[in-house]
Image 1 (cartoon, rainbow, N blue to C red):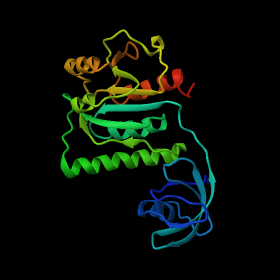
Image 2: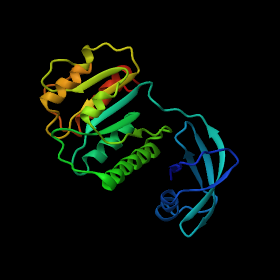
Image 3: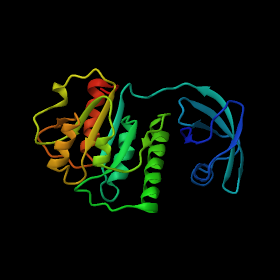
Image 4: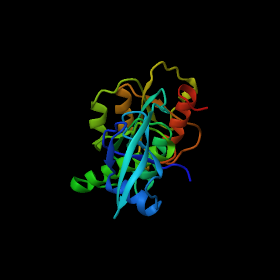
Length: 243
């Protein structure tokens, strides 16, 4: 069995002993049925990872000894910020998971004109925490040690009013601009994508006024869960660490 990788919000120090959070403990003790003496890998999102061993397993609670540190770094040289209209059902979960695997460093869920998802208050906060946990789980699987930040949900106008540094791209299938034709010397890349039905003409025009370059990925219209992942993959292939 592959050694499980577990995220913890607790700062990790070689030689220390910690009790894992409830979700991680339940996964190790109940789902994986691990026992005292078995090894895991821990990371706290601050970079690098630690070997660790289970020292006590009791009633769904798990304690581990934190051992050697490894400075393994699988992060892309690019800092990709994805801002995307919230989509229905499990599509947003899929986007967060796969964007994390592809190397996105920051994800901002957006309320846009064509967004059909209605969330507010406690339900909105719960959903944001849910997306953050999906990003954490994706990092555990893909061996990233830096967890992408899931920002608070914003309207697209709020997002555009906040200055973004770097190359700024907005997906727009009616433009002729292609990534392969663009030049870029900036490691910071902001990618703006609409929900089902895309961004409205007004939203695209506003983005362009805020120095976003309109970008098409090809002749076909892609679904909202396909477009950002295709774009990030191409960006990583041209300027990042995939190819």
